[in-house]
Length: 435
Image (cartoon, rainbow, N blue to C red; front, top):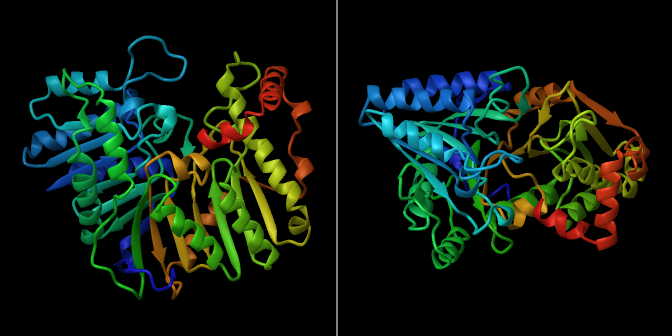
């Protein structure tokens, strides 16, 4: 099915690997500066910090230099209206947006997209930076750590794709399926408020049917943009499952934390039994966004990395036979105090999914996700993808046994207390669906 699925034709020289957060930031700023017609940015959030303000200043400068430039920024509504976890009071990013646009000679709109009524029920996890005929695709949001504005970084995947048709398709979906809806609000307006429940319910139902529209090519190097929300008729989820099931020889999977939906875990297990070689690179618990070093004050959210590690340990225990046969290779990524945010799947060096989806139950059921599926039956891009994978494994430690991962008894006392409470309440299955 994947071999014959339609996509947007693209030349191999029009896909560029950016590879580092710094290269990503520099390329994004340069593309914004050179923009002539349109800039559409979609991310979970655009932070009120040095890097976020640098992006906003670049957008304002581009708009001032060219008032006809069409600039639209989309972020999650709920995430924009709260501060960082632990902050008190009204400290959301929208306050910065409103202040800057009120002062600007040539303002532009920043939209809050409320995918669900509450942030924990689902967010805008749509990704893409469309600038004229170029698409910069990454799972990264915009702040100091994602853009490595200071010392620390959060590693993601970064691609610059030159394709007028892909850019037009992604803009059309945003315009028709998101911005045209009355539930979407301008965060820069003084009177912006949360949509009512009926608007949110109708918007969610419409988003479930959103799609990218393009003239499909069915052979040659091509890119298929995919979008999905919810469990039913989710094109992105279905493509991921078909991608895993279609593998004949080998597969490369990267994800920040290993907590796959049951159907995906089952498909991976079946492929191992068929003799497919699978490499999985996942962030160490210390490379998780929510990890709290033992010397710092602990809060409940700091238990998440340990919960994810236990999920990985259980999976490895079930598949220890495959590890010993050399079919399954699991790598933990760790580099100083930096964090890991990569997602995606490559199959047989012929299909490659570039996505912001975490490949977990939350992404598959609650969040609005998208991705680009690259079809490369002639393996024209094989060397580039292999190079990218090898760069990732530089900081990847291969695990030879599931016992290499810590047990609950080895965790800090506050973590053990929380995880034991979760076990007693039998809440771990519910938590894995929403985290």
